[in-house]
Length: 169
View (cartoon, helix red, strand yellow):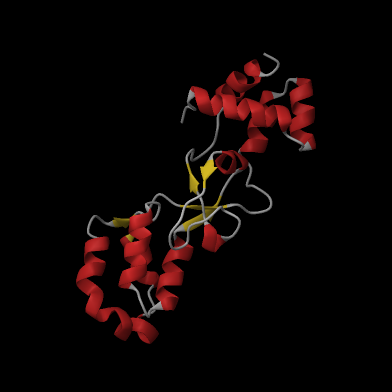
């Protein structure tokens, strides 16, 4: 993944103002690999983001078939529509609102799906994450309030080199 120019500028500002001693020392020493490594580590404390998608198999496995089937059995056509392409994409607000509507009364199943649809972010993903609304959405401060990562995966040494070249300009 290559960062956009605006994202490189955001990364530069964050590197320059970062208070983590590892980043401060790496910047002073010109150790771009250490900077990259820190941004690719899991954020601490945990920062939660919504995944791009989860598989239908994962979703079906998470349903409370014993305790809640009666609550969602009449909605099976709507559930099939949500899952028709083989995956469920939880990032769009409408997709999470549809999930919420379909699983009304099936709180355990809905919570399991939303929990499965989240993951912890890296420091870089946290930097570029945006808050969202709707079921399971928020500012990333908790799993039930996950943000959306605008950048997913690891940043590269080239991303760091581009950002560091902007510092001091």
